[in-house]
Length: 95
Image 1 (cartoon, rainbow, N blue to C red):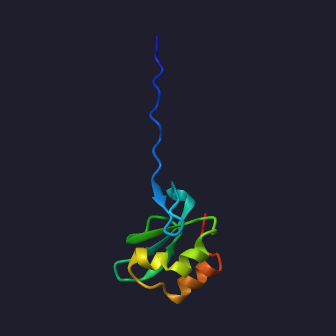
Image 2 (image 1 turned 30 degrees about the vertical axis):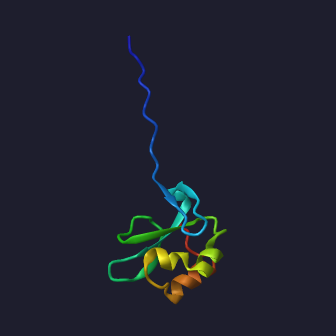
Image 3 (image 1 turned 120 degrees about the vertical axis):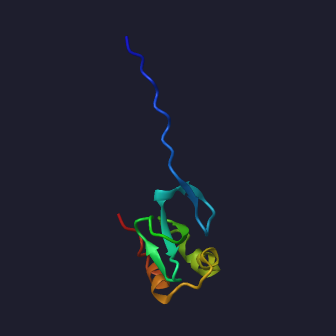
């Protein structure tokens, strides 16, 4: 006679959007990362080394984040023109 054991609920990491302060699962965000050398880039993998700031993947709060400089404040550096242009154009969320 075997007894079925219930598996524990799977834990998914959660993060908070720097603009709208909504907490969601990490995979529902786009991550902007500041590397040790001070370079800033959009991290499509979510695993790059460095300080990360998260934005909702649906892009609804990206204009507000750029206007209020929420990303810059979270990362402690100013956004390079190319990263700003990608966010303004809605580019940045990969598979």
